[in-house]
Length: 308
Ligand code: TXA
Ligand code: MG
Image 1: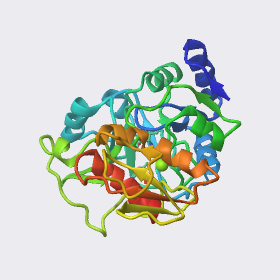
Image 2: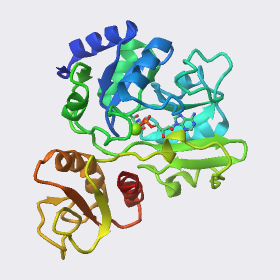
Image 3: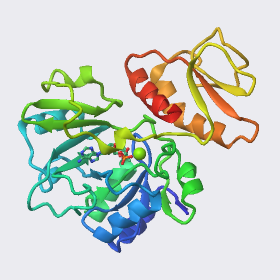
Image 4: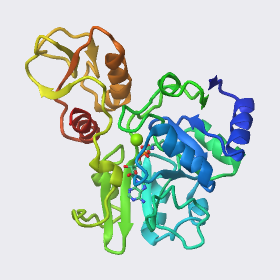
């Protein structure tokens, strides 16, 4: 059930969350499947609804860095990044506070915790009205395409309360940054680039044996149909997902950005993949190559996982 925008829906949703129920909410990246992060049952319900592996921890949404301080040990770098990028599409992995009331299930038993302050006004109103930290993975069945519209969430979870927030403006999940004594590592490429972070933190590559984002090892963001990327030829069974002004390897019904704008392409990627996935006549998807710069890095990351 989609709840229209407005204060009454926020109150209703906050009441549901306080009862331990789940509510989907819009963020500027993708829609999240929210639950009270301090309530083990609510957190367990999120894993169950998504059929998400229990070893894959959830992001906890908070209003600001002050609130984050109740759940994690904040380092000078955490303050620095929060000052520049919160609210916004940046998730910080920090050491969990011993006294943290966040469900241990939410952080999958790790001694770290993922925190993010979303910028979307509906997400912020919900955090404020509920006064709860909200566990919120993307509101899609585990492994599938993330939702950028309320209707995407409703298709997957028809009985869920979903706060309407329009099309998400960015359209790709947040950048995930792991902060340790040695520096910062980018675990998930996203809207905030390494070059954006570089002025504020010492960036170090993540070594394979170190802690990683458990979710990043999985096939993800995947349509149910075969997906091929960097195509310069179109096979007979394929439908083209184009990018840019051409030339094209075949007929163009879908173009991520006719002008070749990466911000526009990012915001439309998941909605176009959802649509191609649904069209009965589409048997396989072939995506033209996207430049490996800026937001193109995150777009190609999602496509690679979807094609895996
Ligand atoms: O934009 C977003 O980040 C969206 C919106 C709803 O906020 N959320 C989202 O959540 O994409 P999810 O659960 O689909 O992705 C969270 C990622 C996963 O790859 C997970 O493994 C990683 O963050 N993660 C969470 N907690 C972690 C931790 N303690 N250590 C390492 N990685 C962690
Ligand atoms: Mg996800």
